[in-house]
Image 1: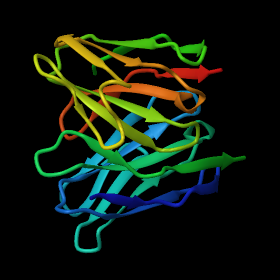
Image 2: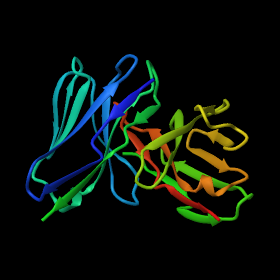
Image 3: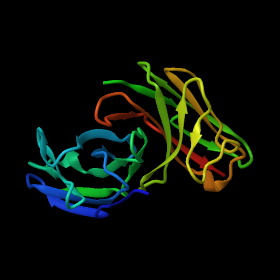
Image 4: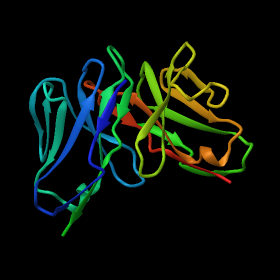
Length: 111
Length: 114
């Protein structure tokens, strides 16, 4: 089966940089995704990494190291609106379109 | 990107009754997924709804409790049957509407069973 570990909570200051880690144990690897979910809202897709390295999309970047079974989401120039839960997710298996999600990291951005 | 309209957004139901949740996608998608999420918790996959075939259920979820319909490539319903307070949760539909596992989610249905 698939399992993912993330910190449950992270607090960071507005304008700072924060890194949210995700380690995974999977039977085969088919990519790591990140989703953002504000309280009371729907999850929204942020990024996907299939290969090692850093993917940058504006203030958000996502990193993957397949040899370490590890990835992270990097948020720069934090804004109050970035306060949300962040989930890493992996496909259930080879050729699977279904995702299994980590328990989520609640990010609180403080002034 | 695609938009998924989900309704109802919330409901309070009596135990023993059933509630049907609807999701409408503004484009055709081959698969739709139904998730359950307790507030502040992770998302748990209930089932995958494929057009033209029976839904595929994950371990711990059964068709009699969560019947699913998928009459066409833009619409699906999930029914929560014979509800008990343990069914109180947020139910979300989702579909792969972009590449690289960029899934779109409906806005969710917050269900309270009393």
